[in-house]
Image (cartoon, rainbow, N blue to C red; front, side, top):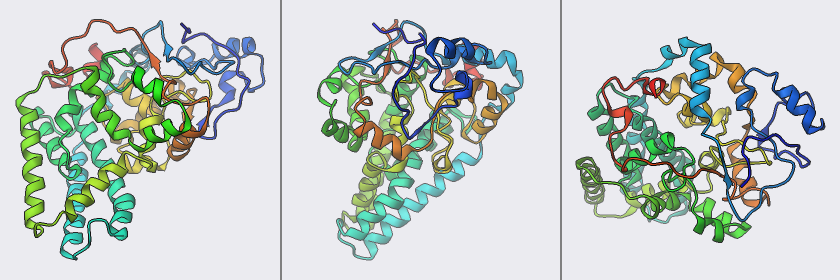
Length: 397
C-alpha cells in the first residue's frame, strides 16, 4: 500500500485547473523534494499540506491511506488557534428564500414551455434546460445538501420539509435518501464500504480510459443514485415515504395542470440530467475529492465565481472542517484561518476539472483516497445534526 502522508518529489506538470502556491513548499517547484519537505514543515498548518508524489499513482488501485482523514485534527487545531470560529456556526435564514425562489423559477419555466405548446424535445427547450435548468437544479441539489446539515431552520422538521420542497423540480425523490449517506460521507470520509461517495472496484475496472471517464462524467448522477444501493443499503423511514409521496403528487399535478403534456416534466428531468452531467457546475462533484497532478490531497477547495450559484460548495475543505458553518459564512471561515487554508492546493476551474479528469492519463476514478472501514452504525441511525444542541456538534466529536 502507498503511504498517504509521505513527502516526495514531483517531476510532472501541474494541471491547468490546479493552483499550488510553491512559496509554501520552499519557493519553487524545482526544489529537491527533501528541501521542499524541510521548508514546508516551517509553515503554519504544514501538518495538513498534502504530499506531492514523484511518480503517477498506479491505475489499477485506489490510494489506500494508513492514517485518519484530515478534517477532525485540523478542526481541533483551528478551534485552538481561533476559538471565535464558533460564532460562524448556526442557521442561515437566507437559505429558504433562495431555495424557494429557484423552485418557483423552475416551475414557472416548465409551465411556460407547456402552455406555449413546445414539443418536449424542441431544441429551444433542451438548450434552456442546459443553460438555465441545469444551473437551477444544481443549485437545488446543493440547497438540499445545505439543508441536510440542518442549516436553514432551528427545527429539524422544518429543515426536512424544506428539503422535500427543494427536491420537487428535480422530479426524482432523493432528499431523504441523500441525508444519511451524506452524513456518513462526513463522519466516515474515505472508509471503504461506508462512504458511498467513493467509486467501487467495478467502476475502477471498467471506467479507467477516456471513453469510460467520459461516460462517468456524463452520467455522474446515475452513479451517485445507484451506487449506494450496491454498497450500503439504508433503513427507510416515514420521511422517505413523505419524500416519495410529495414528489409523486407534484409530478402528477404538473402533468395534469399543464394540459396532460409531458413537456414540463421533460424540461425538469433534462435540467436534472444536465445539472449532473457535462455542465460547469457539475465539475464540483469531481473536484471535491479526486486527486490531480500527483497531489495526494483528499479534499479540494475552489474559490472561483461559480460559488455564487452553488452555495459556496467550492469551499469544501472549510465545509468538511466545520459542517455547522452555513454557506454564507464559509468565506469568512477561510479568511479567519488563512494559515490553515491558503497553503492547500486548490482548483481554479470546475470546467477544467472535468476536462482534465477525462483526458489526463493520470486522473480518473482510481485517484481517490480510501481507508479500511471501521465499525459503523447502521445507515439511517440518528445523525449528530439531528440531536439536541446540534449546531456545533463537530466541535464535540
